[in-house]
Image (tube, rainbow, N blue to C red; front, top):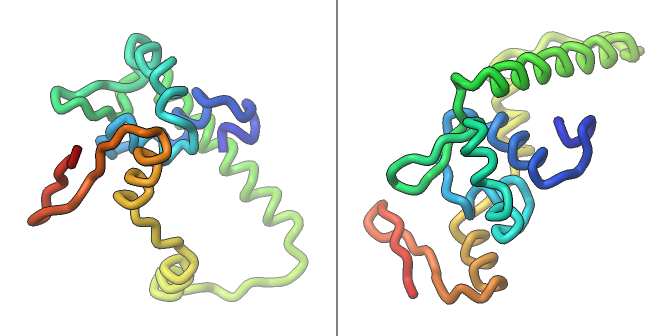
Length: 147
């Protein structure tokens, strides 16, 4: 949602993706795939995001959003306000009345329309395209890098 307002910039895409996944611990590759940018592009500015304390790098080289950062807190507030405006606009333009939907019906709607994405397969395709010669495989519920 941020990129719709602030522009289609790689940094905005990454911050937006992390705000939508606030509790995830992600590798650089996972962040790049989720934000729909290349890993090379991400490498150009990920240290800046860490230096500004927007994200935190864990000891296992994975990153997560710094929920204590004043910038992140304010970005979340900003997104909340944008969502409120979008809901109000949608309610104002609604010409028809809506029936109340139960939680089970909502779960069914979202489960049916949610795309099933195999992140491991997608990461392997990107690794192949970028010529790394490294592949990720799941073995006994663990992920293994194959060279």
